[in-house]
Image (cartoon, rainbow, N blue to C red):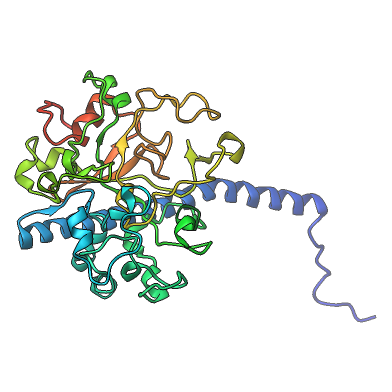
Length: 359
């Protein structure tokens, strides 16, 4: 009988296979957090670069015009009367129909966004047929005017967040849905009284963010023309550009996020999500609140925490332990979530004369 020179090899037993699978599972479990951390580090670096480019844009604007846009632009009755053709929405509803492009929107020419910027008429309000895009009836702009700007979005923010304005503008004939390109970055308007109190300041809202001006906030229909201030000079930042926020993350809108979780619809009635998410919307600029962070069913409860608690009016990001900011000098700064209220307030305000160092 001829025997094989190669004896038969036994296969793995079931126990051995289970042990190997368990080892592989353990290694994957150990490796996955490291991979996720590496991905977040890359996203955070990209987010930092976005803010750096935005900061440089404001400096190039200031170099060109010797000033930068204030957080809001309000057109007067005389401005509206001079329009040819007239804006049929100018005197309809609240003063929102008289608002122009946001400060961030006005930076488009300085971030290689000239093509999109040139589609809009900066002498007209945003709610104007000349500045509205298809499919709005009578709109002058193509649908491409509503294209997203990657520079204005932090990569760490979850995908799928809407920016739907039809719910708000429906009374003016806006189709639903009417999506607008959103932003995760915004200039602080000033302090909300809740955070001001935590910082030892009077219980009042302030308009002294770097781009904040008190006479730009015209809530009524008769904004005094001579008192409107549309631009801000860097010289007005008395605390120093390196100590004052220019832009901060208020990410995740239009969804409502409380401590990294979407707020259930049952917590709110009426509008299911925020409106102030379009990069050209002046109302992306917010008074920075202090929140308690104690109750997910009452996310608006005030307290002394201003970062990564609630994205309605607080600094908010999807980075662990803090939020990205860019200061007036163009430097990018990661603000820790556990920063004291007085430190946050000092960085938000341009003229508080606080002796607080962020670094």
